[in-house]
Length: 488
Image 1 (tube, rainbow, N blue to C red):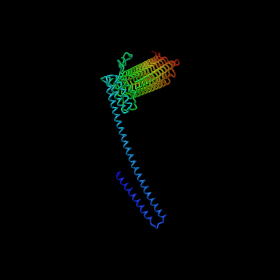
Image 2: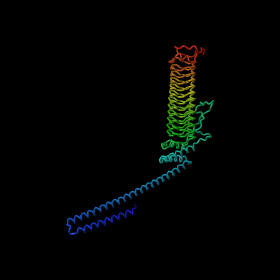
Image 3: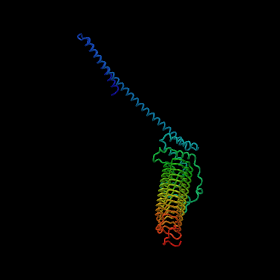
Image 4: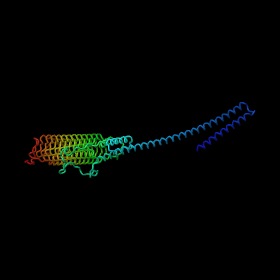
């Protein structure tokens, strides 16, 4: 019902009530003037008439008050709606102003990124960082801009950039019969140039960004970039794409590279102390001489990676894939290699003292001259492994499999070979003084020139299954089997 119609009804109601009340009082007062009525009766009728009139006007007043209260409520509602619209309009205007401000700051900063003065470029980088902090919606766009700036200014010009599909192992240095070079690193690599200050500023901003604002599929693209000697201390590069990047000599101490793709990356002589490389892809990467002490490489892919002379002291390599990796002369003391895949890996001269190799796979691995003193090789698979002249003092080889392994002149003094399988292994010239051979399978094991004096839990049946000669030194209480060759 419209306001005009409501006002007409109200006026009609007021007029009717007034006329009715006046008429009622006129009738009552006229009737009460009759002489046959007593004064008390006249007063009673007049009082009733006045009361009725008062009630009618009171009801009318209540109706009028309710009407105007409704009108006031309606007006207040209209004012509230108008205020809400004004607020929405103000917010829209504020958003427009903010977008305009962001656009202006964007354009100014992006324009300054191409400025000829390096100070101006650095200032623009930090302006972009501030925009990303103030306006979270623009965070990822700015990170992409900075990553593009790094790629544009440090791109490696290569005819064959590394891609995800590449599967050919990368060999660094000169090759001879597919063996990696053993030259000192200092002779093979020149001193890397110092990274540009503006590029370093961009990497610093990227490294300290708030990654919680990023989606799962948003990954930094730093492929094929030359960022040698970059300062990335504590940088957050989680899930970053660094395929083919050159990070030689970079400081990555305590940085987060979990899930990062470093396929074919160069990290020679880089510092990765306590770096998080959880499930990172380092396939074919060059980590020659790198410092990976206490690094987390759990389940990392290091297939065909070059870790020659790298230091991995106390590193976590549990369940890591090191198939055909080069760990020549690497330091792996106290490292956790439990369940690691080291098939055909080159561990020649590696230092594995007190390393945990529990249930690790070392089939065909080259451990020639390696130091495995006190290492835990319980349940490890060393079938066809090369352990010539290796040091295995007091190592735990309980239930390890060494079928056809070559342990020529290996030092196994005090080693625990409890229930180990040495089927057709070569232990000629090996030192087994004080070793525990309880339940050890010595079937067809070559023991020519081996020293078994002082061994524990060795019985004549085990010796009878082995292959030795008069040069084999057995315990004093044990006779030489008659079928052994008498010449040696």
